[in-house]
Length: 527
Image (cartoon, rainbow, N blue to C red; front, side, top):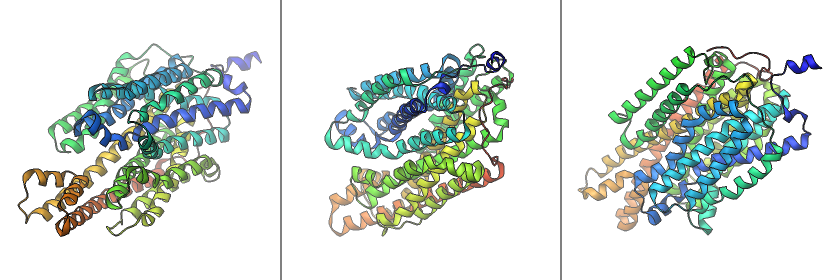
């Protein structure tokens, strides 16, 4: 027994716990990650209220939303490395506390600047939590089938958070003030802390070397610049010198990060991991899936409100088919992985997402909500198959001491994929809308301010149409809806093509089966 114990570098308290204790710990981790992803989208329905109460401008509204995503994505690799070094439970608890504090600060912010800073602090907490939760789950569940089922539940709650955000936000705003969309996180995080202390086991890399300070600085700067350029591209334009320059600078810094990690004797992220197809191809597939899912959510919530006329809450409720299918199918994806393997499950999921996006891209002004249902359901089922399968592949391909930073790399692909999906699809929608509306308005000599309002967004155009009334208002509303639908169709069709390319990539590159599990004995090699 003594020899056997020396072969295991880390004690694993989670393995000795009864199944009920592990299930309770899994529930704590899943609810926490649900809360983290909920805050990616919960604020969207509160933006008009923030304009009224805090007098926020359009650019300020964007930063209230994006400060969270920017800090979240920029800190992920550092947070994952920290979890491996100091302990995943400690990092998770610190993240919960930071998230709760940032949520309370956001709820009672009295100015736009304070709210932006508070949202950024929430991003710090989210970055500490996300990789820690997945690494802890991987450590708790050693059996391949049990681990895949647990990761399926984790991935399902992650996707569910994105889809439930508008619904939860709408319900809270219907009954409380705008700060409630943040304040609700505080009791959930507090209960999570109280439950996690006795239930969640700790683990870390016992062979961790000294901190890679230079790598940490380079990763934060590179990811931050790249995410900023993606987020700001729809505002300044993809051809803007500022956007292009910032994006190139970010890529250059990330190239420097890769060079440093390759040369370092104590790299934060071992680049050898990317030579494993079960890691690199899975990370790429996850990013492409989120490109389609985030882009679809961005377009469809607007379609439901502006084309079909649903209020924000009712529009959010009508996104439930995506949320429901993710919640139901994701835990069952473990069965698909066991029967068909990682490659076929991932490819099938990506194909379903692409099919769902293509179906909705056929929309016309005459479409009803029922016409969108097949696409919503296919997209939800596809996401529910892809996310657990690729997350299981990523975590199964890593040495056990590096699961935190590996989970962070998976999280970075999700954040960048989602940000790109919203930015690219949103830009295509906006460009097509403006082109068609410019042509439609050409025969009329409208005042400059009114024309800018109409061209700025379909919401602005419908507002002008409502004030104009009569036949003129009806014609303007019809033209705006037609232009919006044309742009939405172009964006969704592009997303479908990107996700379909991901399906082909998965079939060509991804290994047929998920690795049996993190390698306990294999030493960490120099990148």
